[in-house]
Image (cartoon, rainbow, N blue to C red):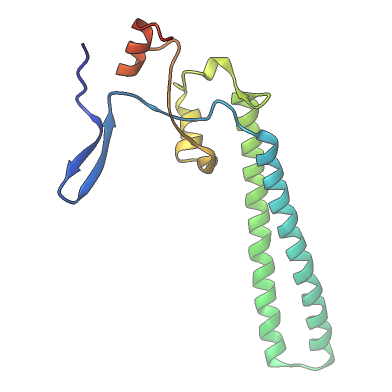
Length: 166
């Protein structure tokens, strides 16, 4: 017999509030993940940003040539806008490259051949959960119910240890 104090939500007149869940945990870090697809997404995003930067550089060069021929206030304003856009894109490129490096390190640590490594199957590693719950891989998180093999933390884990499922 098991008794759950909290079941994941509390019903109020205005709706439901999230609460702790004694019955089960959410998986967050998926068992299988298409790592190549995620890395290609980052590489494609970086490539697109670099192309945008190159186009802006061409516009900048043309405007600078125009300004040297004759001083024009509107052309100077356009040049300032282009320079700020180039700076913004450069920071976005740097951010995407650093995210890509972080993602590669995460995959190297926790995944092997698009599968979660066996020692992380129970998802008790706080860093792994955090990467998918609130971190850089949030968009790839799983909402499935976590079924642990070894550790008994929630009621469902205890039931899985005792009952033989067919």
